[in-house]
Length: 219
Image (cartoon, rainbow, N blue to C red):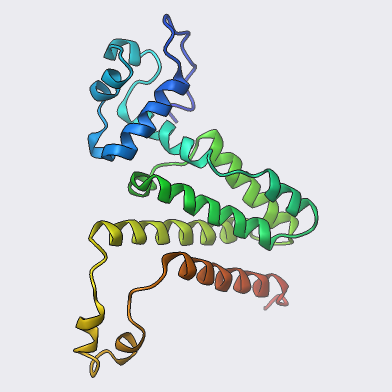
């Protein structure tokens, strides 16, 4: 596998650092999104030439991988690890998922590139924490549980970012006018409090996982 994580790092011939490149790339992405990121634009913001930039990263994909992993690095684990070591599993898992979602929402562009392999040290470290928490809690298939949780977070973030970018259209009047055809939707609507809905849905998912973990094996 050839990616930014698998290649040996070159010794730079100048003072530009990889950390500075990543910090500036995240700032550019926050301001202009993925479409606004080019190697030339990034080099200009760093007040350097593209040739110097290429000493550290080969392609725009390298920059995106590094920037996305920096977003994962914003998810703190220390207090969650302490809770896990105390025998709890739900609080650390809930905390990790909530913080991951919050980090992605602070950088909405990240929702558009979640289809990339998450192989950076920050992403892998947090996935390792999730697997370890689930294994310690007695889940026989931690990968399946982790996959379900990750898909829930990514799906909710992508939906929220997409909906908000569209201006959060008012669907209530449309549905009420068609209440005869869509009575459940007319009564409950599609609009909601994003944070409350995420927390409630995560609770449903964790309840189901807890039940599956404790259920007797079925032939």
